[in-house]
Length: 88
Image (cartoon, rainbow, N blue to C red; front, top):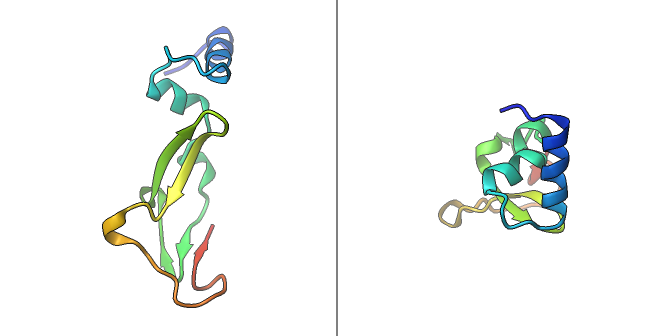
């Protein structure tokens, strides 16, 4: 969906004022998306993707993404250093 400049300004004002009339899809669209932010992702030597992140929206920061949110498949680090943990 495409928005006019006036529509975008209205959405941004509503988002900043924490307007409850915006639905979650509208709120997600006016914030950054994982598709636009995630260039590359590795956990250890294993490639990860945007599917490994869960959207969490806050009033203060907007769209936030949590890695390793799945409680049944938590990835653990056994060593220190960038080659053993999340690198993006």
